[in-house]
Length: 471
Image (cartoon, helix red, strand yellow):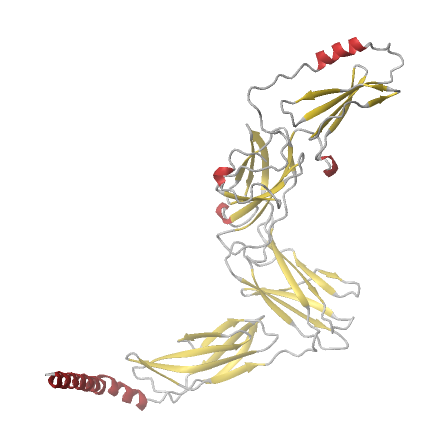
């Protein structure tokens, strides 16, 4: 029985092999033979031509010996330098944008397609040699930035460093190309050797609002003592745009919230294409925070007794790659006080004034008040008033001023005047939170992101934990 089963398995395997061989003979082999019968010739007259700044035209012709019949002919193209790239095309020419100061090389071959099968020819090769120039004479450190102007055009500003091997008499010249338009710079800034190191175009043919278009920058040079090697670089126009400052920044209090609103920067992009950072400083405590939002308004729970400064800046978001952040908007101050408090005044506020012939000094500290303070001429007057919290006190020192024309004020009169000016503060029924916390936590909405200076108590807390806190 076992022998019979093994025999049947061997027979079935043999039949499968025979069927596969039969299928290959009937279906596949005729096509292979047919393709082998057709010779595939490589293209001829492959040439590389510099058609514009950093642009190469590859062109070739089909081999005159190539049979056409019912075959589909395509061409494989490989760019080897400066960057590897591989693609295929049915055309006999192709434009590529690439920096050319280090040369350019490419391969092309014929690809014949027929009934799902393909046969290829050998490769043909062409090269462009690097342009002449002495080593280390090309510019280095090239950096460019664009601006969208009020006239709805785009300006361009580029800076660079002279090559280490460039003679002192080297003159550099800046060009840019955008699509089919090329322009030479006429406005330069020079270094101490009178060499051009910056170039500016106040108006260009760069189209505002386009996405991921390339700007070609070309800098060549001349010298009496050496051949200056040219240099090229490609920039994404969105990546080098310095966004304009947000407009019409308005800041106001709404109950216990600080609210800021603004308009999008001057730009060809619509409103939803920007992100914003809000830089807020509590001028009383010195605490700082930066919040991020994609909206055109910002709200934060604050201490309305404090004075704040706020600035806003913008960048691209969603619609294109990010560019350079805009400058910060002008500082807007809001809150009590008429000036910014200096850092050394952040933790101790002092106010002195003269009331009815007395010098009164207010000092808010987180420490126990002294028992007394000398007012001069051997006289000491001290009062201490609690603020409803045993840990926080305000020291009030009353000292008579030198007013010769006024009669002396008796101690009972002073005490009566004191009680009128500063009546006793009632003890609150509910113990308030310390009005001068060491660390300020922030309230935020989950529609924006915010971070504080290092060491903040709010670090790592979810949105819901921060809603009832103030900055």
